Image 1 (cartoon, rainbow, N blue to C red):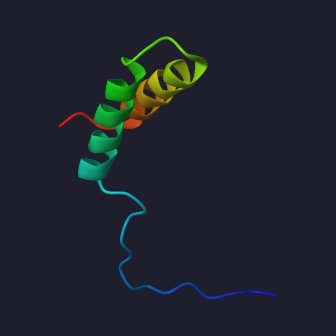
Image 2 (tube, rainbow, N blue to C red):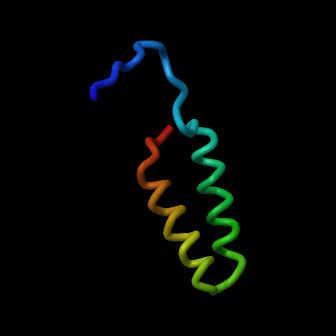
Length: 55
């Protein structure tokens, strides 16, 4: 089975502004304590931030 792809412009899954807000919020929650979840949130924030282009 084959499919066709539309040439119409598509919206990104997440905008740059949204991605930066996610990183900011993850860092905020990560700094709230020392649980495994906070550590995971910080790791995810740093991984995402490292993939974002600088302004």
